[in-house]
Image 1 (cartoon, rainbow, N blue to C red):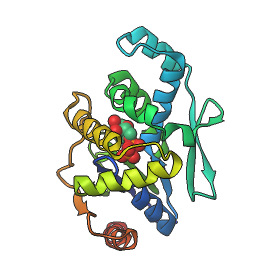
Image 2: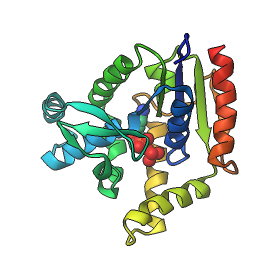
Image 3: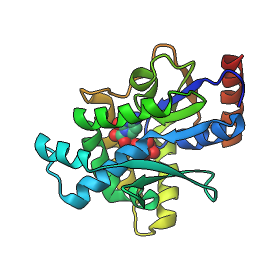
Length: 227
Ligand code: CDP
């Protein structure tokens, strides 16, 4: 790790390749990569399993107190899998049932407080790349490099459809499009920490960029910020 590790934040719309870039950047720089969305997805999975009523703050608080989240490095993916109370739930949190509920769960103030505290602890030593929706605005407003990612909506739908249909051939592109539009809308309009471009973020539109091209651009920014 370089002598002056920094914090790199990557925020943006659903399915625009934030995790792909964050993972590659972290690997190049020898940094830790944290997928903050996986934390909201794991909380959602727990709530679904327990049938937590989202309109009951008591039930939500009680369930949050029962949750312990961790990450374990998975060499096959070159990234960390999320662990929920000792169970590796990485494949489960990517399923559509979770995607359908996650933005509702992530809009709850108590859930955000729970996740943000842990995220800030993970970044205390710097040398971290974290992707999400509010990382450059709320979690690490002082981050040395903030990237806001975007891509044309149909391109994002196609990318997510390819990813999900490889695992579940019954999934329809309409269902993927509908989920993506709904989550984008909820994430950008919620009261608590809505998706916003930080005023000092660099914008990366990767509609027509390959993963290698986007990495090249981001690495240039990162090296300039590291100095
Ligand atoms: O599907 P995609 O990979 O784009 O989303 P994700 O990063 O896995 O995040 C899933 C959902 O969690 C988002 O749609 C948001 O509702 C929520 N989220 C959030 O509110 N704040 C974050 N920092 C990260 C995710």
